Length: 473
Image 1 (cartoon, rainbow, N blue to C red):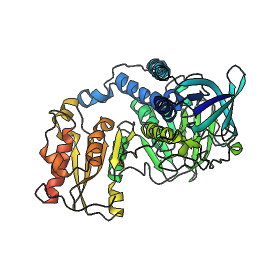
Image 2 (spheres, helix red, strand yellow):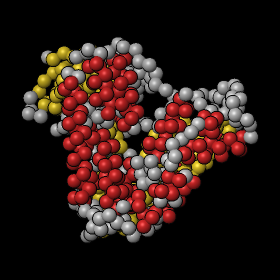
Image 3 (cartoon, helix red, strand yellow):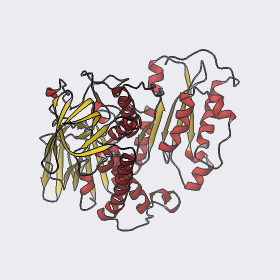
Image 4 (cartoon, rainbow, N blue to C red):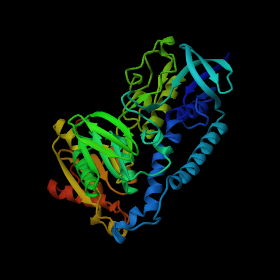
């Protein structure tokens, strides 16, 4: 029996941050990873691969230069799946090497194998070589992540009808694709393949997409997608998916029939908890395999067992998973954790990018906060002209009562980088006057903050520097 202060099951963003945090507190830590290499879903099938695929597609197609040279412009005329995979493998090797080094220098122990609970303090691990060992730990953190939801009525074959893991292994780029699901993953892959000149149709059973994003941003995003001939079908569930020769046929509940070379099913993910034998430790996952936790400590209903990352559900971001892992780890080893700032950014690495931080306009209205908005289009900036941008939008929402920034929402090139300016002002309770009175580098896309700030300031009709009162949190 091996004993530890903390055992972490899974080495994705939540698991690795948790393990390193506990190790830095001089605790004896073990990470159990069932994959052949560390990194979890984030490194091998999720965050890093999809973002690498996106960057490769934009580079090889010359997408960013088409504002100058036209839609027919290409850097590489014939792009293959092998071209995309080449850069992907290089990136993954680098990520794994960095993570292995971090574990090594922080003296985090590692074990390859599949873990299951014997009781609340004991795990049984079946190692890759078949050996079975028992691990005892004061605390256990579950960071097992998720896997694609694969309903029985979808005839997955790994080639023409694939999930969001299998899409990375396809042998050729399809001329046409149907994406089932307009969540973050579905939209990211749909827009990436659209940039690769695949004719893409997105089908979503709900009437809207990306409901947690400001509606004005989603509307602008949808306009850009339709403008490049992507088809967006909302409010229609899938009746059937059938493979017939070289074509896949998707029938909708209203009887409409769609046809394409490939179908990507990306309608949700489920927690990878089925192998853990949770009943042995007193836990139970919901119907999607997720675990309920205290939102401040990430402690489950069993006091010494914690969970963090995608397995606990929304927002399922690599960035938030890391912070959840850090907080859970500190609580698990008996060290207080400072609550993180209220506002954190969401990043959707579609083409174009979307990033948002703070309240949406819909949330501000629901909270009955008097407000005003400022808008800036990237084409209004000199940097936007230099880059050949004719799209891109920054929206800032301010309180009329206190003049504080309430939300920053961006769609367009570099959105996931630009959002951090808004994040800083939000968490420091800055006002519209910050954007009006400060100087931004010229020429940059960040100037859009000043343009949007001035737009709001002009509409607000008050002199700067008179913030009073407090807005509802």
